[in-house]
Every structure is written in C-alpha cells, then in structure tokens.
Length: 120
Image (cartoon, rainbow, N blue to C red; front, side, top):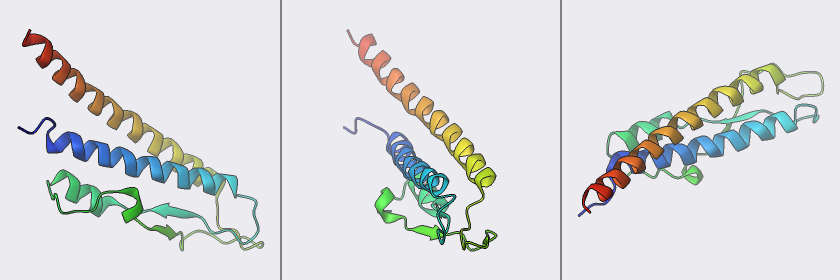
C-alpha cells in the first residue's frame, strides 16, 4: 500500500526546488554590490512539470537543476548584473509559492491525519 500519493511527493519536490531557488536569489541580493558578480537563477519548470505529471523517473532534486547566469540583466560598470529591485520581486514571488506549496502539503497531511483518526 502506498502511504502517500505521488501528488504529495511532487509537492515535496517542488518545495525543495523553490527552497533552493530562494537561497540562490538571496545570494544574488547579498552580492548586489560585489564587482563582477553575475546574478543567477534556477530554471526548473520542466522538472516540476515532470514531477506533477507522475514521471517517477524524473530526477527532482535541487541538485539536478543547475543555476543559470542571468544573461539578460544589464551589466553595470563594475560588471555586476544584479538589479536589487528585480531580485527582491523574485524573492517575494518565490516566497509566496513556498507558502502556497507548504499549505498544500499541510492540507494533505491533515487529511491523512483525519483519515487515521476516523479509523479508531
């Protein structure tokens, strides 16, 4: 018997990926004034799609997604490409996604807890 649905596993994978992205975006903010630093981000939409489509063969760990350098960012005279406003917006959006995913996971576990309680 499978205790947790693939959907809950996919939510956990999504949370891990968004957490890794949050750390990377925070690193960009921390290096906003570092000469020569190029902003980076995680592009993992394909991995998330595979996770939610039930592709159990898909590697869904944060280590499986390589950070990409932001080549579209405007490079300042000190060769730094981090725009603080853009990074803060990305951080906020990512944080909202983490909260939403956490609530879905919590709801799934609450449903399981209720089902176990009903068995008594």
